[in-house]
Image (tube, rainbow, N blue to C red; front, top):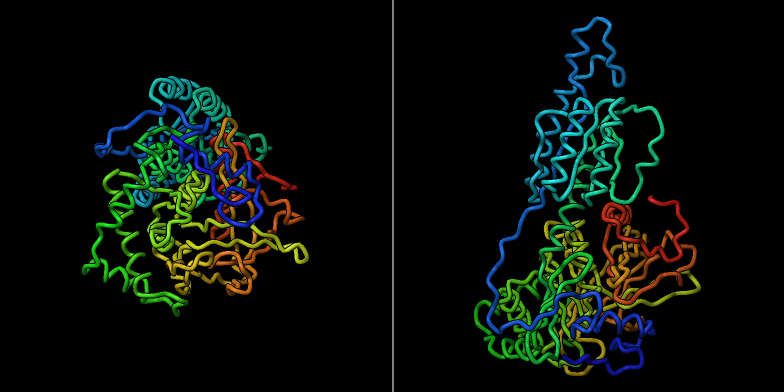
Length: 497
């Protein structure tokens, strides 16, 4: 298979001035010519049989001695959190909350009914973890003197590569705990903080789901082929662009297509140079991609989409991301992984964009033509938008301009696959959305202030993914839990925030 470079001086298909070597290393992924994909195989043209996806299994264990052993002894010393603390009652409350987390996330939290009361119990569980390895371990400690049992189990989790959530559910727990801020552990000391526990379980679920996902790379390949990304284990399947083009040509403007056009145009504030033909081709692209995803039993896609005339999928990519189906431009797998990770980790679609810098105000610009409108997720409010002619050609294909709210917090991430994978994370806030022109760039152009770097020029990466909301800590804690190095270009700390 060939690796087709884009035609401009940077190799990214735009005039953004990005690092050509970095982008080309990532975009070569579409042709499977990269070292971080393993087990590349030629695939038959027949559609693969759907694979049943497994739920992430988190084993939950409570750590405390039975309170009855103290309450029945007049000299018993329950100690922190006090002899009147009802650990069994707290466990029942937590188990009920775990059931709700299971329902919301689609995971299994397998709760041990009997708590770990002593060293022998901890050693028994340690042996079980070595032979029956779950996707994650959740330790909930209710007794200040049980740290020895917790430490034993955390050591086994480290040795067996089980990501562990260690939760001390006490309002007061004396002594230092900073050493639990370490790779492989998401440490929480908080009082009845089920939101934090759910966040940790979501981190385990996201890694599991990434490993079971299949992404399509639509490129100028002669035949299908397949490989796996080495850190997450995501399957990447190369599909010839000719197959997409054939499906596009087969799509009729029937009632389904007309309803889709109505949905596209219904909430748009206005049209900018958009013809009926542009809208019909946007519908054809979306229906063709949806059919391709269904035929391949795939979870997302990226495409070598530039210089495609009316076949460009800008509107479809925005709509797919609205549905939390990752879709990335320019056959950029790094952006696709980042988009999928964010959708799983925070339940929101991100904005893949080209970078630019406002050096005098120390601000950053993100611009592209495929911004989703449901920036708070499928159940949130829709951002205002208008339909716009694709900014860089004259054939009149349809793109989208989305307007972000000033002062909203934002989080920007970039996953870098490779022999030494890493995750880069930034915090910021929206300054304004610019009209295009005069701001140039692509149709959606949002100016942000990077709030955790002293110099905006420290921002690295092309096609970073911008999310509305303050989620930098969650991404960083995900990286810590799964031992994914953080790039942290220019980040002064403290870490973790």
